Amino acid sequence: MGRWDAVIDVSNVCWSAHLPPLGRRAPRWHRLELVMAAWRERHGDGVRFDLVADDSLVRSLDDVREFRRLTGSGALVTRPVADSLILERARDRGLHVITRDHYVDHRTEHPWIERTPSRFHCWSTEEGAVRFAPLGIRPCSRQTVSAAREGKDLKQARLDLRNPRHRRILETRWRCADEECVQAAHWQDQLLVWPSLNRAGDAMCPSCRSPLVGLGPRDPLFEVVVEERTSGAEITRFPLEAGQPVVVGRGAALKGVDLALDGAAHRDALKKVSRRHLLLHMGADRRLSATDLGATNGTDVEYRTESGFQAPKAVRPGKDVFLGYKDRLVLGGAVTLRLSGRRFSTMAESAHPSRPEIDGSETLIG
Ligand SMILES: [Zn+2]
Image (cartoon, rainbow, N blue to C red; front, side, top):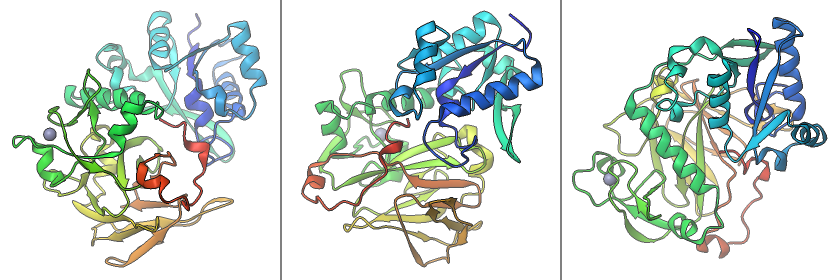
């Protein structure tokens, strides 16, 4: 293997809105070609690539011919979740890794990640040209790693919304009744984050891991995705139920959704978020509104049009702004909030068939 041979996280590349067409959140095969060409230009035509993708990529890819040709010839390998194979290949073959994923949930099995951060490379597009930069792997605490693993476990379970048991869990409003639970105090009367699943497949508190108490059926349910604005890296996701306004902010003293709860890897961006930053409310009429609660670094709204996000508009503190399903909020200039586009078939929802259409192209993310 040559000095600059690399394994490419193909799903990560194809989905990346940091590659042309910029800002477009749908997987494009051409993005992989751009990345390979840019790497060759920088490190010579002799470099070789290991290509690894998630099985699910082909279902939403714009052009599957080349994908099928490469999987047919064995040049591209797929797995239900590609991460483990990517890291094993990089470790065993001494390859560089081209990805924007920090693999926080794999740090225990792959301690070499933190020992050799220079092997991880991410991309950006500057004036139409693809550039590489160090990914910026930083050491993570054991707590962060285990939180990331739990998040991944739940994510995998969540992929199967057809599982009746998981669907029942999603359709239920939960409360952690453990008096010792640190997080339950912040959520007050109900769980404001996604429940975890125990080995038996029952809902448990993601903080103290005790069984949750069901409070009855949920109203129509949505999911908010929180990302770093500059890198697009996902910080967390949380549920948003119609008619249940939540305060979003940062820090342990908050009564609401604490974005920093599993965001240790995103400390710099989260620093710009105030303790009580924003009130988020999905109305019974499915209108999403946000109110800035006087946050130090302010809140902007970015409306989405055909050509991408418009210039940010400042939100006046205390004043409601209404958002469409594709618009996003920017907290302190550093952290974005948007709806995920995942569909939750709750009983309450089927009673309201007039739900506005949400772009289905994002349903396969995470
Ligand atoms: Zn708890």
